[in-house]
Amino acid sequence: QVQLVESGGGLVQAGGSLRLSCAASGRTFSRYTVAWFRQAPGKEREFVSATSWNDGNTYYADSVKGRFTISRDNAKNTVYLQMNNLKPEDTALYYCAATPRGSFNLKPTEYDYWGQGTEVTVSS
Image (cartoon, rainbow, N blue to C red; front, side, top):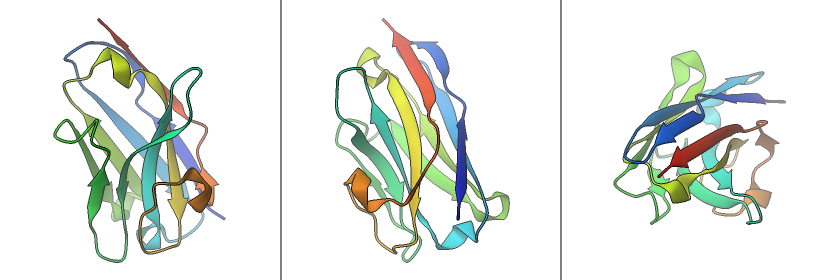
């Protein structure tokens, strides 16, 4: 079992920055692919970014490419999402998710463990 806890959300003006954290406990986190998803009110959960453990590659949705950066600190069992130049359309509940599979996947159903989410609100 892996337990995930997100933190770092908040209210920020457009153009501002936030850094989300996803802290894991329970298993060797370095061998888990970790992704960030988000869900805005009335919308489906969508993929934001991921880091796969088997090759260390990172992946981004087109909507956040160039603005968000995912990174991981295996010594701290934590994955981060640095979000810069935030836009009102980035407003959502952000979740981290993990799977022992080596490669990332866009589908939420491919992830076995989820955190409770952290809210991000970007005002215009």
